[in-house]
Length: 124
Image (cartoon, rainbow, N blue to C red; front, side, top):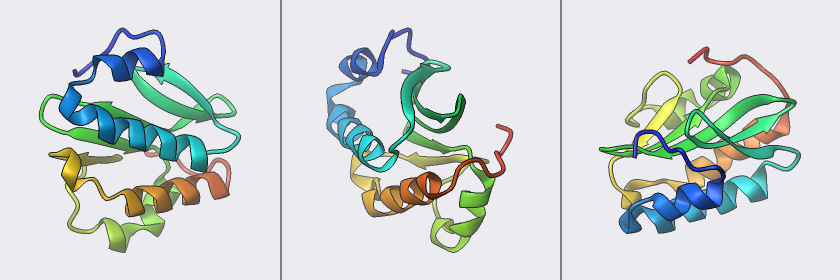
């Protein structure tokens, strides 16, 4: 599922392959718990979390992996040591299997994102 036409996150998760659904539901619950003051939306065919109209977090079930998008360059920089060695793009952590998802790291990234508004975006 590279791009979804789902109208909402519930519809998106219903379309995710069963083997990934549990992990993505858990990630959604974590986002909802940690990102107070954010709006949950569908953006670019994936679940995203916006504050003041700007997406700061998103996730997706891609063909080869689960991706977690962190569009805050300041948070990425603050976690540089913990992100070293992770499978990453410019603003995307990639998890090849649901079992490889580090929910402790994801929780800490979400908390850091929620702690301060704005910051620099990665431009991706």
